[in-house]
Amino acid sequence: MAQSFDVPLQSRIVDDKSPICIPFILSRIETYQKQHPNTSRPFIIGLNGVQGVGKTTLVRALAETLQSREGLPTLVVSIDDFYLTHADQLALAAANPDNQLVQYRGEPGTHDIPLLTSFLSSLTSPFPPEGIHVPSYDKSLFSGLGDRAPPSTWTHITSPPKIVILEGWLVGFRPLSPVALEAKYCSPTSKTLHRHLPAHLMFINSCLEKYQQIWDQFDAFVHVDAEDLGWVYEWRIQQEQGLRREKGVEGGMTDEQVRKFVDCYFPAYELYIDGIRNGVLGERKKACQLRLVVGRDRAVKESLVI
Image 1 (cartoon, rainbow, N blue to C red):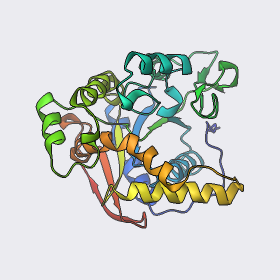
Image 2: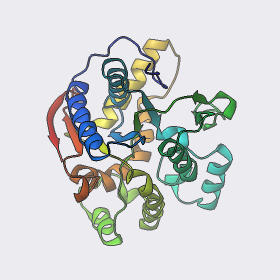
Image 3: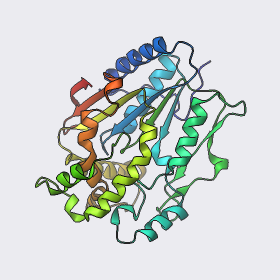
Image 4: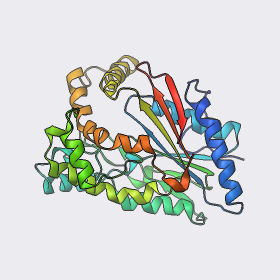
């Protein structure tokens, strides 16, 4: 019997993205199984979505459909759960006191890549009889600065998944050459890059090199893009306002605080989004990436296979 991992089998989530994604994913799985008929390795999907675009809703719909309708045990993993520990993040910030990009979690360099590599290796190797624990990160600890949750609270899975979805806002970002980064920095259309020194941008660019061994394991990739990246600010403000209404939370981030929050992430969008749009998986995995482009209302306006 298929086991549900991480995402509960809730009522079917209706959206306009999963009906496009599911046929694409199933076609890629079918091809993968024909090419590797005897493999026990799970099919690994990378999923990138700009903030506020509805990535969480999509991931839940995909996991639910793959599990309940297709009978494929699916494990959803967020790269957010592999942030550095609080102590390690403080050490990174202290070692780079002038670089605002790494003072808090989020940017390349603020994740525990050895932990993520080890975790994925445990999934792609013979599944251990004692099962596997899925790391978790608690963003509420240390007054919102966050820390890795105690291992005793990590989800324990006892049978191997057939599908693994690794999602996150920077999943699939490829580092730039120094020449390409300089060209981005000098572009008159840049919104946030000039707020940072080139050396600080190069630092996160060099950190991104360590992530490539993870992205290279993807068998398929889904990218939820926006016609205008500037809408991310508006969408995150709407999310914050909705959260306060839903939970009856007093306070929370003001609109200006949300804008400053997004400002921390926007340089990476400016640097790396074109690389995602041009294709993450390279020539050897043609037609393995699906790009969904949404409008201001977050409805899909265009879809294409790369």
